[in-house]
Length: 502
Image (cartoon, rainbow, N blue to C red):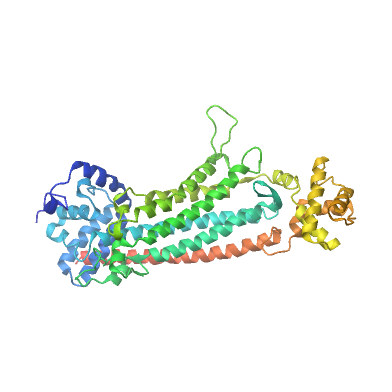
């Protein structure tokens, strides 16, 4: 049977579209369809298998239709028309099939289905697979973080608040702050995956269909956990799962960008705490001494852009009375967001895993500017039974006078602390200078910490062990999801080939 010559869905009702509409609406949409080629064809295969199994299509017609769809799937897109004037993937596929198996069979693919639930189904598969990829890269990043944290659990460095020396910490403890964040990111990715991995097929345009389609069978064939029950929701009109995924990606990028910003500042000569490996850096066209941390700058830039992702998507999905959404007709934002997240994660993994840490420089800076004086105030409370606020005042005056006299924590005098005690609290402070200098020692500060999760190296290692165990749990869960999906797709293709073979 010969196929029709036109490739316009609108031809019968509206006649030809103008070239400007094709150029401005359809041409920009082609790259999105190309990126989702596999997902669209899998949705078509699952729908056609279900139509055949339920008897909505005869075995003969189902075999021909599935044979044509498998030809498309096996091609990987080579030879697929991608005609911008034909519009959506549905019409592209029907046109392609019509040329090979005839319009009578090709036109039956849309039985009991709309472009709405078809596109929503393809988008859900694309996004669930994106979440799987992002989770794998995040777990690789977490592994690199935990390895460096273990290696540097005792690597002394200054802690900062307001970009001023606060209290001594370790590089390992600082990294574990991000380890905790990425552990939460993995949990958020898992939650979003559960709400994304649902089947839209059977929602049709919005009201469901009179054909006795088996919605749960298509969900099973595509490896979904369940169906989107409400037909209008399934048809793509309640798309909060997209917003949730974008929000989760934005939060992950924010955490990654924050880590990159810390390392970026510490990469400067003024700090000199860390260096990226040479292969992740660039130099200047005029200044030969430069080693610019390109990997950190790229992550930082992408993390900054990610702050605008969610409002951009949400704005496109707030249309009049929640009918067709502007996002459908606007430029494809989500593909770029996914690409950016994966790029940033890949750069982050290599940057953290190969990071050069200048431990001596960190340790030198850690005790340079009075970062242990909160410990001195605590010791005055213990030894002299004073209120903490009082000892805070005493130590503040002691630090002010010592700085004015050009003294450092290593060269302080006991009589200066005694003087501050008299002036600020009219109390006698008779601490030996040896005790005073030990209390102010930055490394001793680490081992004085007594609370769970503190900078004490034992606590850092304990936290690292806990998150390493959590990472194993995340890995098992994500692997199970991947196996479930891979097994379902394998079974779908086997079933489709069986029907196609008659």
